[in-house]
Image (cartoon, rainbow, N blue to C red; front, side, top):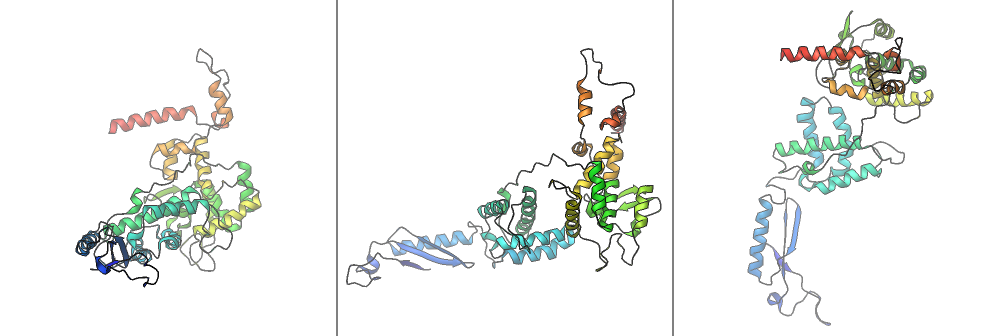
Length: 399
């Protein structure tokens, strides 16, 4: 127990810390103690020493009971627990462990030295604000800091949420402060699609190995991570298999003549991966390929700033839909599990919209002729609607 007084300044000629009435003065007692290396100090608002001791004991009891979000246990910093999280959970249960390790380089700068219970929702909101306004320079970067997109900040918050949730599950924290922190709103409904001219210019501007990756991505609509994880053992005479997919389900793709022509150009080395770094004999990383891809965009004159590696996937799937390929075939190639996800890839052209608007009062289409082909208009063919109705009817009978 420790209570003390901080008496007001004495009269001239007296000792600055001396109070003439000593412990019997009317000044209030203060409690001052530490729990888990955190200091708690406040006034008891009473000049009665015994009552002050009682108040101090109750406050200490409240702290030890966890009402200040701590427990009777040794302190652990966020950096130390994050290492435990990566070692005992992420490496065993998550495929995104490398991404989590990269994000932790940023999270440790903000929360690494803090005790777990010192991380509050307010601190996390400040972290969001600083990342969005570009007050932090990226790890390893020497250039001026740049504002981050909301999607990037959300991924950092998701990583922080996973770590602190596991701390609660393992008994290191009473409650996760991220639980009350909202994710930032991301508007990703608009999808950038490369034109035919942009595709040709991009392919010509890419180095040889990147050109093969880009060409395969534009043909199959696969994700870059799936392409980089592709091994020679996964490629057969008639089909290839993506084993490491986003949804965890393997996906088989028939080997068309266009795909076979690209794969035949890839040299087979002692490495098991199709796309291998010649220096390390390891598979290329997404970050390394993305850096080379951005340089190729500049050489191709595509400087709109809204083109990324994932744009290749959007372009390929949109092309399949515009050709009139039925939804279930596109889903089997792209790996989507619902028709609703394909709505993002439907982009009616101006000609297709005009065709829909040129209808007279009798319901006849005035802008369509017998020789019109919906494929040239860039939309879905009328036959697709009938195919979907038949498929949906069959599914309803099976269920």
